Image (cartoon, rainbow, N blue to C red; front, side, top):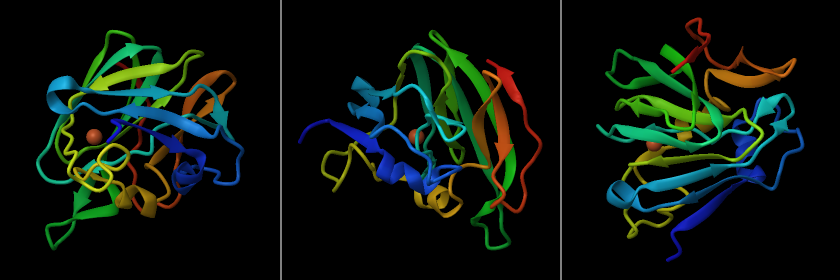
Length: 190
Ligand SMILES: [Fe+2]
């Protein structure tokens, strides 16, 4: 089992603002070591359509938090939580809280359980992070699609509640029209 994997354009089309846009073959590279050894992610640079290169984004299955440390580069971390339906389950197209946090080398971001997360590379260099989410190498596809991560809820909505686009050289948030409810949000410094 090789502990590394890549996220391709083919897969990322599921969550792009413009799935027809041209993009690099690989958006980001993952090396998994789990909670102790840590996981490393390396983002490609550039823009796809109007969007900065991003990770796919996911929620965690169960009560699992995570911390990201930025090792190099500049990015924006998106955090979103869903409203709870009358059946006690999260409602995928209704967002309760949304945050966009600008980060750079040296910053850390805590991701509480139940909080969907992705990150965007807004710099001219690789964006590199370490994180402490667990890995179970006995799973079917533990490196690319670990079992603790729920990608389906994001795929269904074609991405997060906001896309991060380039506008006159600066990052800007654009609402994803597929969500029924989205709180207002702006990009904040860490
Ligand atoms: Fe995660």
